[in-house]
Length: 537
Image (cartoon, rainbow, N blue to C red; front, top):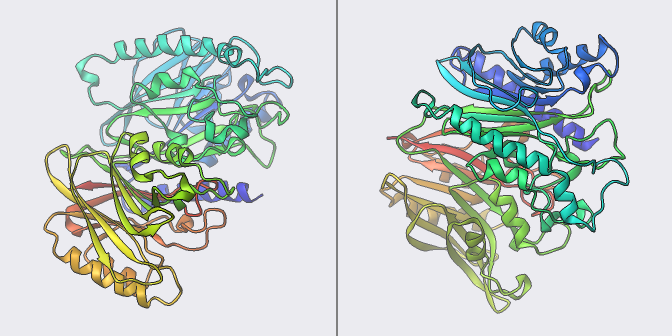
């Protein structure tokens, strides 16, 4: 029940975002759109010739989807689009596209049963290459008793047709869009892949998959080509039951994520995703529907920067297990430029004598820096910064000692356009009395006032909005304001407090695209915060 309430909040949040855009006169110049992929199961008619397709229409309407990649359309597509008031772009009997926006051109490739593509015209003369696909599989491994976990090669081979078809399909899509007129046009490829993801079946979450770890090859094809898995990016921690799209109708079968929305392009960022698998009148399909909210922006000379702050609790999960690989897997899914880490160990006994900042940086392919609070268990304890871009210099800012010693860590970083910024990470005192915390904030504010470069300030403030600590450090800054419906960052299991924040200063130097709090119920007792910002020219 708790998960269903969370999904309802996500749906309401996505609806509020769209409504806010209209209220601000953005209806003709949208900053976001919603894409859905859904295999509707035999035209949606399993529960009746009329009632099933009607339920499909109602679910799409309630989701607020603007574009739908549909599979198993099977004769229902034209009627569904008419009810939605959408443009209908079919190909063969299986795959189709339903779009609120006009279809400029057919860009389909491969077999008509498996792939349909459309160049869509979004308001503001924005163009989007959108594909709906269906991939086959070699052998049934979802029905009870059909999955042999002792034969991993056999399991991979069962989905080999999916890999083979997608390799050929992607090669043809690249060829189809190779003309200069498509340069810079973002691409969304969505559909029923009939294969699982290498981002899910990993060692840190193998207990959810009967102890199985599989590097599924199908999902590598688009990820290795620079596409992002929109759902996994917005739900960076694996939760098999919550994530699954197969199958809400047959809970005794293997529950897996086999429907995906992949995207590539500087215009797009996935800001939220939701799996829809229930409907009061009866869910009409054996596949769940997947909806992603995309934020669209025009590329700046300097690309948007993805910022993450995360208290990792030295890799200690809520299951009592220290697992830094699990932390790395979650962070890798966020594709961050900069990550502020709190509660980081360096050679401490409790976390296996590992330099955690350096190890995470190596795993994510990022530069790293560490700031030490104090000696601890034969090593040190403090905080860290990971950067996708070169760290020119790093500095510890010693703060007044509270219940423990504290420092802030500042890194001067060079961006691809040769401009430089400063990234500052903090972790303040935690007790209820804010005396020490405010003293630490005052000392850090003195340092920030000396900076001549634009800076980002992030971390675990251990204080809440409207506190004097937050008021002091947010002055003149652009705040990465979180959605009101989902702003709490602690605890990760039962969020009730907002104590982790991201700011960028000076305010006039930055623009905020969006900010979100993400789930990570196993990995730490805090939830990670993501903000996407742009540095003005």
